[in-house]
Length: 199
Image (cartoon, rainbow, N blue to C red; front, side, top):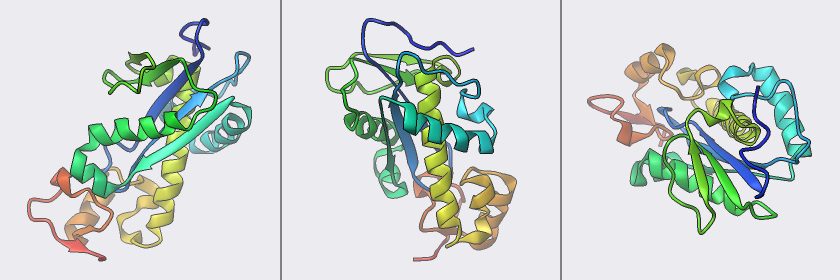
């Protein structure tokens, strides 16, 4: 059972990312402010929710939230600044779009770069504890999945429509056979001798 809020004095926003561990594509982050009476029985950490239910929740969160936003940082910037900084930057960009501005940020995980002067709480496995973080995890995951399905059309042999860029056996075997394409994160050292295609 998710907690509705961490506290009730300040306006809270939950934030989470999707795609940090992927071999290819952007990292996405979302930030969500939920109304005080929000509840949905399906809402949970996006990894615990079936794909079809995530799509249902995405629509409900977008229509019910006081404010929500999604942002992404592409593979090239991930390679330049590293994935952790890219994840935090995506969170900052998403939070920046929220109106009204949150007064407290709930961040999934154990680290965060402070956003302006807004206090934050890092909550390990927060997407399975607080509704606003769970909602952010659903948006980040569904937006990222849709993006990976879109670029799958360009490079179908990697199976992104199924693995979404994660290092599954299917994806790793395709990389061995075809090398890396323009969407792969080169800083991840996926192959000892990296070959590139698709430029």
